[in-house]
Amino acid sequence: MAAEPLAVVVTCEHAGNELPIEWTHLFDSPEARDALQSHRGWDIGALDMAGMIARRLSAPLLAWPVSRLLIESNRSLDAPDLFSSFSRGLSDTERAVLVERYYRPYRSSIERLITAMVAMGHRVLHLAVHSCTDELNGVKRELELGLLFDPARLFEVEITGDIRGWFDRHAADYRVRFNEPYLGTDDGLTSFLRTCFPDRAYAGIELEFRQGFLSNPTEAAALAQATATAIEQLRTGLRAA
Ligand SMILES: [Zn+2]
Image 1 (cartoon, protein in one colour):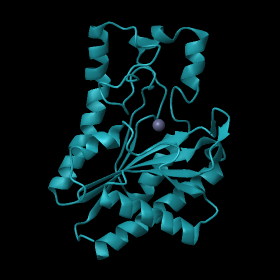
Image 2: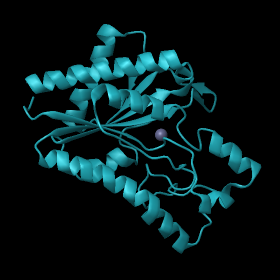
Image 3: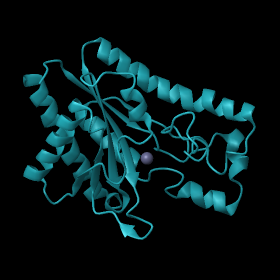
Image 4: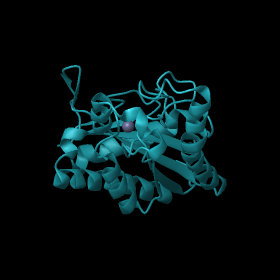
């Protein structure tokens, strides 16, 4: 493995369900208010996990507090679900305002930080922290942690293999799965950043934590601790390589 030091960046695209005051009128209906409070509006529990992992690793954390129902920061600009059913009816001008005021500054800040780290000679491990519902369409999700990555990127394959290997040896009660409940190659921030940086310089891993597990703060803290320990060990190993 290469000898460049590993730098960790933690992000949280669905950290909150906040709405800037000028857009609250889009969410006046009971249906919209319910959606905002649900998983449709944000990733419940994800910000706490991201914060605990970032603190433990002394890594920078960039989190986005605005609800994805206003504009989805984890989608490409041409994605059909960049805007939700509540914001899709806005005029082209209003949509452009959302892109320039919210979407672009957040995405650019992450891209700039990683660009600077790569320029300094680091290999960057970007952990994008999310949470998923316990079941979808009646099917239970059999995991506590999903590691989403691109199987065609060697650096990501190595890192996720090492993380799951650590869990297998030290914390086998947690069900850690590869590319569940989504594929790491689906449209998203990490998929975009892979187009900006070569395989050996950038690994974009999405961590999907199951929300039911996170509902117990003690259990959630233990899982965050375990995840950070798995990554810390990997970082030490890479430094020593
Ligand atoms: Zn998410």
